[in-house]
Length: 155
Image: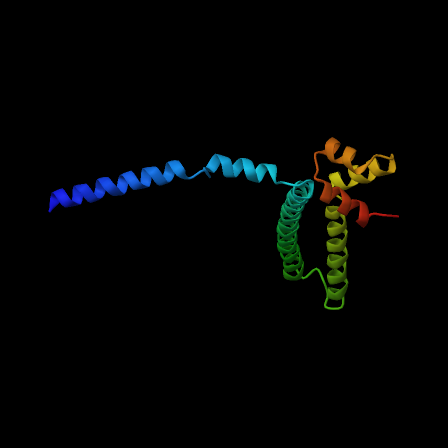
């Protein structure tokens, strides 16, 4: 019985080696064939995908930053508001005014956060007549982000 198994194993190994040698499509050949069949359109689509992915990643980081700042700001304002109420420095008629002041402060802080340094730099470079590609290289930003800033701050 073991002899039959050895003979069958030998035959199977021999057949598989022959099949591998006959097969003309190795990994390297398939790779070369795919590289040769890439069109300029495929390359452009790949670059656009990369730019969009980078833009989305940057936007996600900015959103997370804004969210964390707003949470910290809200906590600070709650503490401030509670301390004012606990110290009886505010009469009941003045409470709505304090709430309005807090809301105005929040609006100012959100506007300050939106005007980040890179946005200001991009706007300055556009006003100096620079092209999108030059701004991307100079500020190390991706094209999608620069175009987004340009569209948002058009005058």
